[in-house]
Image 1 (cartoon, rainbow, N blue to C red):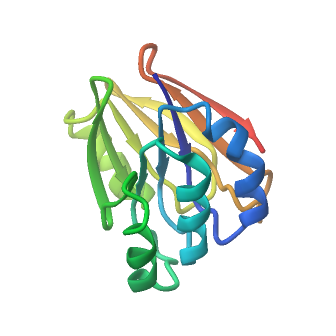
Image 2: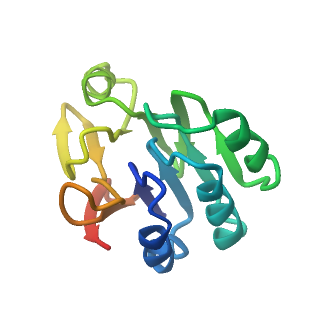
Length: 162
């Protein structure tokens, strides 16, 4: 199973649109926070159809109330708040926006993969038996626009520039 992981889109709908070809190839999409505006949820919901989308809060969500209302229109969009625990194709996955907390979750031994964002740095490292994964920033402010594709079978992540 291919799982697309994005983070820190910060309203860059143009980069989100450029990523759609890859996102549509995934069996699930994870967004690790800082999507910002409700129209980003609409674009994800309309563009990805039946693909489940899991979103956590970052520290830059402009209007959480309207984001929640927008998500109600798309049954496959799941808002988890600041933290999510998922099981995807047998993988125990945690999502949190902040790197320091993500590292602690990876060290806990409870998860196979921990996904995070916030520092806008694409990174994948093994912490014990856990893959600690930051897809990088989708927005492209501090460097190239990035995302990651996680293979649930191999437990390997590939970063892709948008």
